[in-house]
Image (cartoon, rainbow, N blue to C red):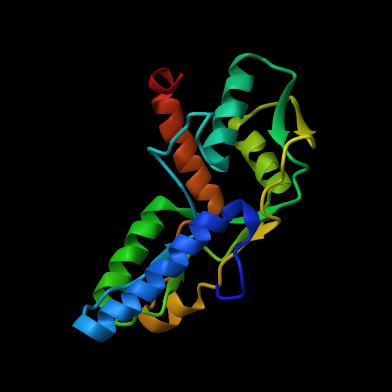
Length: 189
């Protein structure tokens, strides 16, 4: 976190995260405030933002593949080349992790919350295509950016300091999220 300027595509966000840790430590020292700074990795789950103009990768892929399936489209186009990797964290696990940190963690040392599982965009797209039942092709638009090459957190502090580990595996979380999206498809579409 302190190894220089943050990665360009996430610089403002990264600087804000650094500021939270500094502020927490300063308030703890000056006022005795027992604050906890948690950094969850990429969240997803039911009630996510499925708007293609502003959603993150999992809800966007779920929506694209589902819409393509309904339209019997021959292909789905995704950004980049599929090589970047990400760690995803199911929203209910995140809520439990934040509560566990608030109840059992007494430090301003920042703590990462995540699943510890890393997957490439290409493999994620294949998993979602299979989950949705889309039979068409995936076309990677390499004129669009890949984004950060890798995003995976070290979540050992959460496990060691307050016993938190994610429980929902990616496949189960994707299935739950897709089921919710299908139930609310008329509202979303």
